[in-house]
Length: 116
View (tube, rainbow, N blue to C red):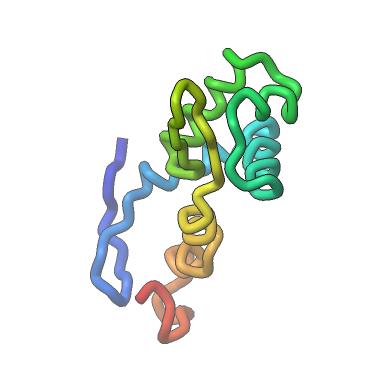
């Protein structure tokens, strides 16, 4: 598995393609997209309420939540015996930002503020 590939970015940094692979795999499932959408609409949601919202048994929901957590797309906070989930807006915005698009542009075609 390729961890980092040197990419000719303005900042001189490398790109961790394995991390992007994990994130995009997490986004490639309709149920996980639905979970992210519901978290966007409702904010912080208890897992017990999320079971009803997405109409899925808790065991399957936990599987999908773990994938989203491992990808950094959602956050979890435990209060007592319950876990509350919310969208990681910063990571989702970074992932869907022009920064990623700049990685896949020819060096000569990049705007001056791209990947900086």
